[in-house]
Length: 334
Image (tube, rainbow, N blue to C red; front, side, top):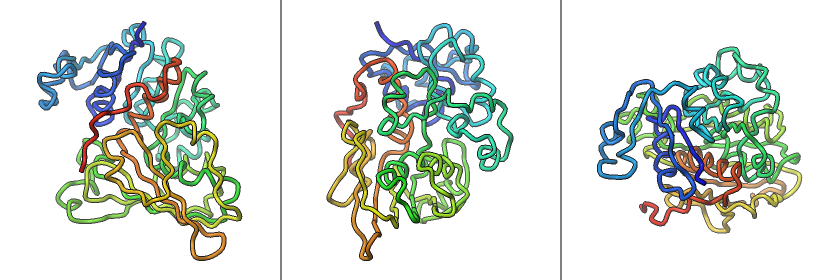
């Protein structure tokens, strides 16, 4: 039997990446693709590049949540934060949920209010019912979960980079450069093409919304962590460099070796080697001073940083091979 999967909010970058993956997944049947702006609109009309493809023949609809829940084994929620809080009760207890918004990643509602500038509407759901969906660290919990909070893109990569130092970090500073697609499809500064196409621009230094996710997983005091998110002149991918002061060398967790998509490299990390794939590449180097380390990491923010990890989580939840549907045979290069 195939997994009946639906995507709520299917017209954004993450939603379209999920469509691309799920239409080729051997164990998935797409049930519903919803968008508030479209009613029975073929995908190929919204995204002409899909004309003539299997995905292009699918239709976006504004189907009500009760119907989507009834017709789905799993629902991917690709909605903006806050909007998801309103939608989640329509699906709870009726189908499995993989939420790609930020609404259920944090356990402390005060952290949410601080970083998202609004009180959480469903604080009773921040009690651990949503499993944090980072497979390399929480694989066994994900296997038994019905509710998954997919990690943020910056947060996921930086957690993978720093987790080998967990409980031993004296201080960590990270600069991460993301492609413009990280801002989504809506025109938002600093990811507007004209100013960004020939420039680097940092923003929300030590105030980025993915920061508390990182601190939560690492159990790290915020005074010991600096984060400089930056937009680069490219569309896809994140490249990050961390400078770590720790009282012990990195200890690679067992979950890293079990991951089909995590590559710890001795050579330098290159963004071109991971864009359009579901791989995350990491490298660990000793610094010049004792107890200092330089860690680099890269992945595709729309795949491993979002849709790819969401499908990894789905595979684990339904007992499928974790890499099913995600080993793309012809990744783009360059």
